[in-house]
Length: 106
Image 1 (cartoon, one colour):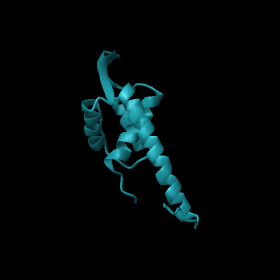
Image 2 (tube, one colour; image 1 turned 45 degrees about the horizontal axis):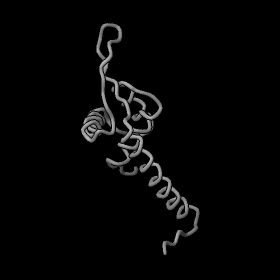
Image 3 (cartoon, one colour; image 1 turned 30 degrees about the vertical axis):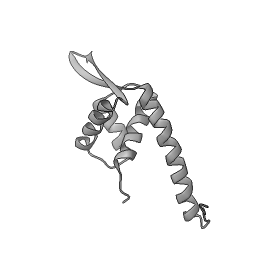
């Protein structure tokens, strides 16, 4: 119902990776469990975040097959903190409207 933009997707991916290194398929399943988004949308997000040095990737063999794991970088942690702060302010503003208050910005 609400539009999901690139920054929100980035923040969600970084949030998952903040908890633990995660392989691509598992990461997409965790994000998809919360946001209605396709895997084909998430893999370009992973590549972009990697290009921007917000995450890194490494391969690990599991049961004879390679899995690509993603890991949040120090720059990714800093960006996640920015996203968290901006999200909290946005959420507070929307909550204020929904509860009938005002959030006058002067």
